[in-house]
Amino acid sequence: MDIGVHTPPLADESLEGALDYLSEIGVDAIEPGVGGYPGDAHLVRRDYLDDEDAQAELHDLLDEYDMRVSALATHNNPLHPDDEQAETADTELREAIRLADQFGVDTVTCFSGLPAGGPDDEVPNWITAPWPSEHADAHEYQWDVAIEYWADLAAFADDHGVDLALEMHPNMLVYEPHGMARLREATNERVGANFDPSHLYWQGISITDAIRYLDDAIHHFHAKDTRIYEEQAREKGVLDTTDYDDEPNRSWLFRSVGYGHGEEHWKDVVSTLRMVGYDGALSIEHEDSLTSSREGLEKAVNLLERAVFREQPGEAYWAE
Image 1 (cartoon, helix red, strand yellow):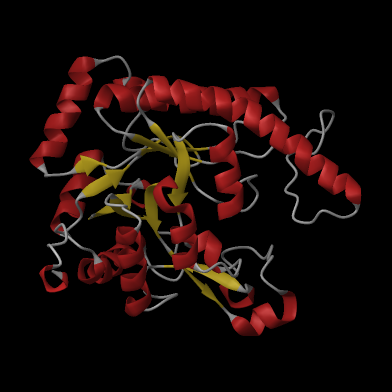
Image 2 (cartoon, one colour; image 1 turned 180 degrees about the horizontal axis):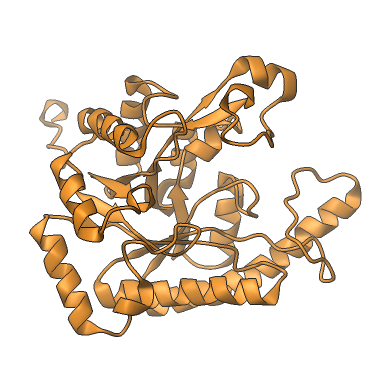
């Protein structure tokens, strides 16, 4: 395993400046945005796609800082009922897959997307309960739309030898492990999880149990924490639409690694990832509004450095 960083929090830095900083604090890998919500501050997709010289220069720059790319990130909604928005998201995904193949990166991180609740609706509809029954019908319609799209995209990704790592996220069709497994079963094994525990904590999901459940379906991992604030949660639950920057009134907040759950928990997470065979990056995603990007990143790196396994396990000589 190694420690990575999803780079949007450093968007005010050039790529070389970000690499220099991250190398100094002990980071081994980057997950740059190439479209969608993460943007493309450090890797403009079309500047590198089909350009071997530009790709070679980027490889040289990464080698200079002993850094690798764990994944290319493009988080958007390819299932949006607005055709133009869906087409943009689809183009981002397909070009990211092609670029990953050309550049030797094996994973693209993304969202499942979210359709409307019916063919005549104009906005996506996140359904969280099956009653009244029209919601259950709408949910099945959404799955029909999603499976048709993702089966085609998964075949495209397989042709390019690239895994699709979907982040289980609220306001997306796939937001928890059973939905993740359903989409994978309906498509192919290129479809798996960008396992981000921060969106599972507030749903009451056990992170280590979810890791064991998904097993080899974990293609990438986001190191990101969440703290539930019980006083607020007792009053209004955790389906909280309070603005993220209204921190005192939210029932939960994204936190830097270690500020939602302690070091012992994160060591257990790392150990469970090893049990299911995950040996990739722990890519830190900083979205903690109570700290600066750099301080949050540095504290997360510091904790993960004590938790991560750098070497392969030895033989269990004591069991012979």
